[in-house]
Length: 623
Image 1 (cartoon, rainbow, N blue to C red):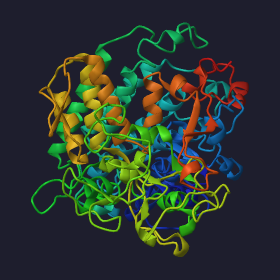
Image 2: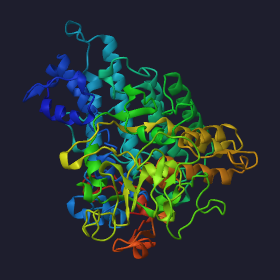
Image 3: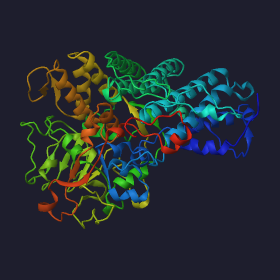
Image 4: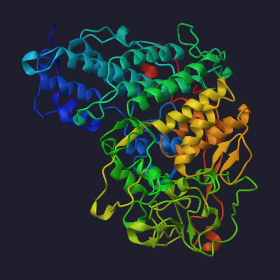
């Protein structure tokens, strides 16, 4: 084997620390070593594989600031002035985006490096019986590297669309420049390769590990989860028969998108999601629930602790997690200023409007009971079920007397996702005060620019002043999403299939809201026309908006549905930042204008890459 001097040991080990598959690693301070010596040493071999994990995204700080997937959608609203502190995607959300814009994750350049490391690992890893690294363990490690390679390709595909694609290629030490001048491969060709690869790797990897030290390492369930989400995207209007991409070709003249609609893609997506559900549940995964003493589901504790409890403590809804995440920075930025937080990471008014009422109806339904007039005269309690949740003054209390009626009588998920003016903040035993120059609004960038802070996925016991935050995993894929993926695809190919309401109601039942039924609306169910494909599509999308909010999924939903141009290209509203009392604070006020162009569906190929490689074409509409 030819020796190649590569500086790797601690660079890769440091990167690996971000991936946190860490119990099987030992630190060792090397400087310059060879590939040959790496793969003749068990510890260095494990370190190399650990380094391959390092670009799995952080679904807290990563989705929040670096990747920006939360901000680019219409769920989240960070303080606009944070752009002065390195928040590169805030200008993107405002339409200030060009082919020369920098984006710190730099997927185009960084992920191919990780893919190369995976390929090198697969080429050189070997059993080391004298060091107790068996051939069986090596086979599993190769499966992990194959999973990571396919996963990173899926991230590239999701970000840029068609990309240069040579999955098994390793750039030789003595390469020619022409070796690097690769053009883009058609979108569907890459989808098909990832689909096949993940299907095959799922046959190699276990569904779970009995060794807790391996938590976070690739499993067959993770393979299926990545595959199923990708296939749902590939079946959706953006890339399934989109006429906007007619004649968008690479330098060889091949069309990069299939612009002819193919219904079988929905079938493939539905089948993949249903297989994932069946295999995950057979492996012990289930929707996370906590029960009341009478055996009923406690929706508040279930939906809150879903994001706070780890897999080993019963949260088997998690399918794919990043064990080590920067949740503390997420918590600080969403904690109110008056409690030592940065206090400017909020949710949008459109998300506030999206939550259902306590009776399970959308706020615009004439029977919902929704009002934007006046304030409550008494404390509000969860009245449609039971709960042991106590994040207000009393068990089951959700609002205080004097709460703006917009926030009264809403479903449980609303109170777990949104911090609004006048809401009880249990950590400090006080009501939040977002009035201008109030306790939580100093009139600076560390205040909610539209009157709301984000609450979902945050630690209720956080203590920013003492830097105390509860550990929790970063959930990238969970079973609840798969239920919604499955029924969305199923509705496109088989309207009226009873599975649609079955799995939709599993989500609503856990959330403590009335289920849908084909029968007559009553105190326990809401009528749904299961055979009306268009109506069911809207119900499913409305449920996704609420159930999956602030998890970094909404932006991809708007993209794949081809709705981003309308939903994200308009004025955004909230409560009045400068309001000093009830009369002038609680009124819908425009605080931001967002711009979204047809080009923005895909990240552009950076100008520097286009200038280096004449075989590349720019993403659609960027030129």
